[in-house]
Length: 103
Image 1 (cartoon, rainbow, N blue to C red):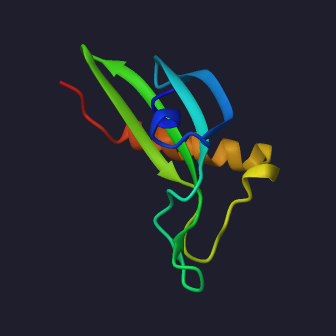
Image 2 (tube, helix red, strand yellow):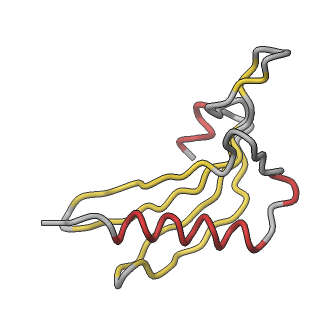
């Protein structure tokens, strides 16, 4: 809901509660219009962001990990997001979490 407040056209493409290394986490893929890191050189407008997020609580702290599915040389079409892309985003976020040390 917070993303929609700042970008009203934000759309939830996929969401689920998942197991992330023994803890419950909220996984979501958002399409945020004109919020990407890349810019169309012809129009000078930012490209859309298709972003995977993993939100989890650990030791009383709330963490939000993210990965961008659009990058130089590869554009993800939000309207045709497939299961493989969802699984790749989820796996990337789980790897990020597994690389972290919580104290």
